[in-house]
Image 1: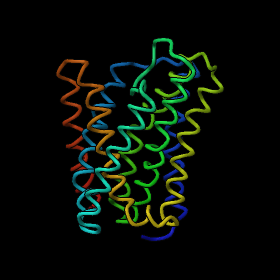
Image 2 (image 1 turned 180 degrees about the vertical axis):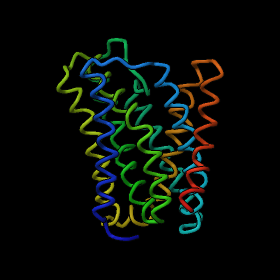
Image 3 (image 1 turned 30 degrees about the vertical axis):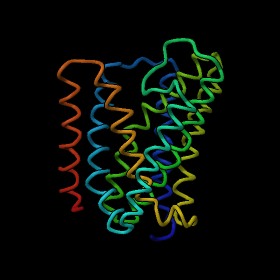
Image 4 (image 1 turned 120 degrees about the vertical axis):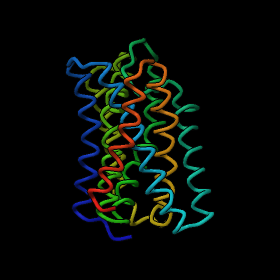
Length: 241
């Protein structure tokens, strides 16, 4: 896998900035449509699962074989532990109930590993090629805005103030950039970054986003989910991946 390029770093910074956009909606008290957010989550889930299943996991298995499969499974389990054992309260969406400060901090800690691997995914995707890198970057961007919105609203619900709510999203963005920067220089990330990315991407799509929108009901969200997968294949074909 090639060294970190300025292009990869720019993609990492762009992905990180999406966390801040989500936070800005909450901190700035701007209005948004909860239905539109649900549609975004459903679309992102379809796109992310497709990227993980069609690009990341097969390439990881081709390079690392059985070890890569074990790493992907370990990454899936690790995100579950960090988000649902350490950060038990996090969900993609606005937090409307009061929570304790400890809950908000735990959710942030639980998300940091996930967002770090977002950066690893971007760098690893571009390590395969520009087309795959662009697809992975798109998958990351699609869930970054709801993620920033969620963590900042959780901090506000804990009474921590707008500045700390925005800084929480900044921490997630910083972890993403670090993931991009460290992928090539850390041997484990260089060797197993694709498998890690596949496991985490599958978790976010299948275990975070799908349950989030599935409980809402209606026919529009399943359609958006399938559309996310369809748009992935169209984009992949146009990109020549």
